[in-house]
Image 1 (cartoon, rainbow, N blue to C red):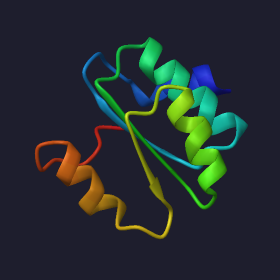
Image 2: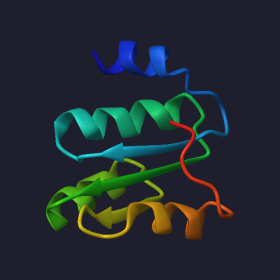
Image 3: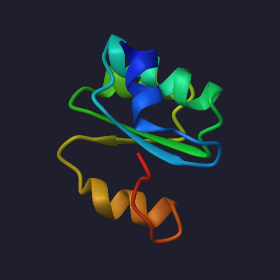
Amino acid sequence: CVYRGQRRAGIHPGDTVAVLGSGLTGLLHIRLAKALGAGMVLASDVLESRLAAASDCGADECCMAEDDLAARLRSCNDGQLADV
């Protein structure tokens, strides 16, 4: 389901990808997005331990779910939001 979802989302090399939730499925999304050439992957979750796992899986940026995700994306992505 992760592979199909990313195919349908149309991730292209260089895209910025936001992954909301860093449980098992979220971690798979992070790894696959990086394998497909995503330029930057930002992960969000409610648990610090999951964000540590997201970082280990290749997330370039991690933030707590209660943080301002849009502001965080803009600050680390030249003022832009995520492509996917």
